[in-house]
Length: 297
Ligand SMILES: Nc1ncnc2c1ncn2[C@@H]1O[C@H](COP(=O)(O)OP(=O)(O)OP(=O)(O)O)[C@@H](O)[C@H]1O
Ligand SMILES: [Mg+2]
Image (tube, rainbow, N blue to C red; front, side, top):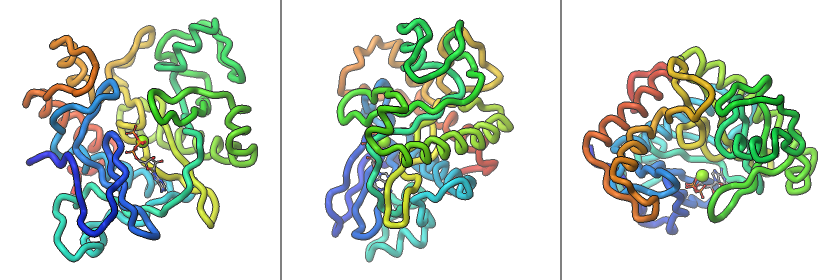
């Protein structure tokens, strides 16, 4: 299997190209294509993980379907025949990795739910002596501790660099109180349901990031849903608080990059075949454990 690293679709305007996905304007709707690109430390590696984009797209589709009763979402179809029918020519490279989505106007905040404290929030917790403005966190949390209750921590969308955590009040100033209350409630409800499903599969959903957008028919959940790119998944059998946890999906990539003492500056190096294979196996394992399906289509 070859990696799909880029797509170009004649007849459509150039896509908006993110680190992993390419978003095409279909006129009324959007076509979101998940490539096989993989990033580590925010840099894209020279080669891809063949099949990774299909797994990511189908995981999103799985969650959008499973959680469609919590709130409306943007998924219209990820069905092969429907995607093929968009084009006069065959596009086998798109199959399994594409979703037709309802266009929305993305809110200017990212909505993060956390059940465990790690990453940027743990850094802020340490730096502030446990007093993060607007969050009532207990004293004495260690890195990767479980929080007493899942919390909502909105962030700004940085066009460059890392998103920045903001308070609920700052988020309300950006999108309005009514909107932020609604997306907070949705974010926490999606997190709770997904975390329970993950727990049944032996996976800890440490935290996850959502986007919501405005449409004529009101707010909807957009972008991706609970993928390894938007979430921290930990293997429950290896969980031990007090330090950072191994990444479920990218650990082999990170270990390799460390072994070659890469300086974390672009361009990313090429990953050797065994790292590619073992990384794909982790994505596939996550897909199987979470969806109960054997393989993506
Ligand atoms: N239904 C939708 N309507 C409008 N925009 C959407 C919709 N779903 C996703 N988007 C936008 O499409 C983009 C998805 O692209 P992608 O995630 O690949 O890039 P990115 O977020 O800019 O960069 P990164 O690679 O850091 O994630 C995001 O900007 C997201 O806000
Ligand atoms: Mg994104």
